[in-house]
Each structure stands twice: as C-alpha cells, then as structure tokens.
Length: 245
Image 1 (cartoon, rainbow, N blue to C red):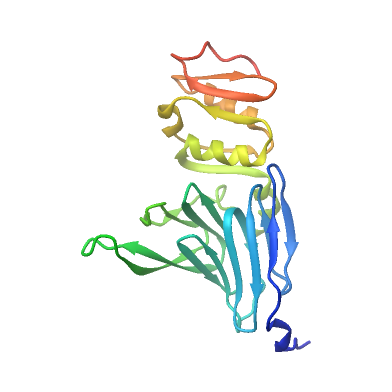
Image 2: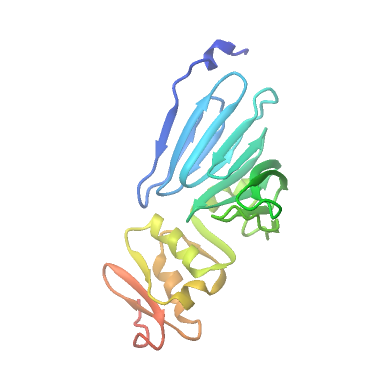
C-alpha cells in the first residue's frame, strides 16, 4: 500500500517523555518501535525525506522499520546516528553520548576537537556494527569503538529482556548508580569519589537497586548502609559494616 508523500509534509512533531521509574513503548507512524527508559525526553518529526528523532535526555532503544528512501536519524547532543533498518540504543548521561548497536549497522556522525586548531572541531564519521558501542565524552572526545559481549548488547529477540535489566561492562560505579536512580524511587547515594570511580561489570534487574548495592558491599573497601528511603555507599573507613538489606 503506497503512502501519500503529502502525509509527511508539515506533520506535527510528537513528544515522548518518561518520569523516574517509568518506561514507555511506542510504535511510530512508520512501524518503528521506540522504547524509552526512565527520565527520557524524545521528539519525533517525520517528513518525506527523513525520519528524525531528537533525544535531549535519557536513553531510548530503537527497532527501525526498513525504508530505503527515508533514513532514520537520531540526534543526541554531539552525535547524529543514521540507520535504515536495525536495532540500536542511544543514551545521554552527564553530557556524554553512548551509541550501542544490537542488530545491523549504523553510521554515527560527530564533531571531534582538532589538535591543530584548539577550540575548533572537524566532522568525524564512525560505522558501528552489531555488538559495538561508541562513547563521545562531554568534551567531544571519541573513545575507541568497544566490542561488547552478547550479554551487554543482546540479540534482537532479547529486546524485552534488555529493557528490564541494567547491564554494564567495565564502567564506573557512578554511571551504573545514575542509571539505577533514573529507574527507581529508592536512590543510591555515593559518598566517596574513589568508590564512585571504581569500574565494575554486571547484570542486574533494573527495579532492584538493593541487589546492586549488596554487590558493591562485597568489594574490598566499600561499605553500604540501607534505609527505608535510600541506600548509602561509601568507603569502609567512613561507614560501619553494611547492614543486611
């Protein structure tokens, strides 16, 4: 069935927003599926030449419907991710952008600072394939492409499973805590910068911050205190030994 091109001319943008602990799944006009994780803001605007999505905050996962005539473009801060038919996620956190490909291939365009002329930037294009991840720091620095294990970037049939878990590989504790805090009303409070900077790997249910905190308490030098309203994580020199959750 042919869709009249006029349908895409002057269409009104669609805004998708999630609160703390809220997730949403939306089928877009072209059949693409977007899943928003908590505390995410998305603007969707289609025309007859491009399907454009702007992620201003949070994280979204996309399963893109194939359309060779209209690329699917996700803009997030410093990056622009272009796909035709694939599954990938884009995350904005602390001014940085993280692009993870679960299926197919995307092209990421970004600006990279140039050493020759401080304060200027030059366009940089990076192709990503399945189970690869690209991070652009808040200063515009592009990290080497990271190849991920299947548990971190699961196959498309595990798309549901992925959205219900927080999976991470060699990332700072502070980054994982920020993800848990976006998804839950019970907050984890980091009190020690050295603990916050420790790098960890794991896979936890996204609605169970206590399990992650219990995992942190097994790390030498880390102490955890549980209360009804929050979880405090500090160095063992600052807190008494952790209580049972």
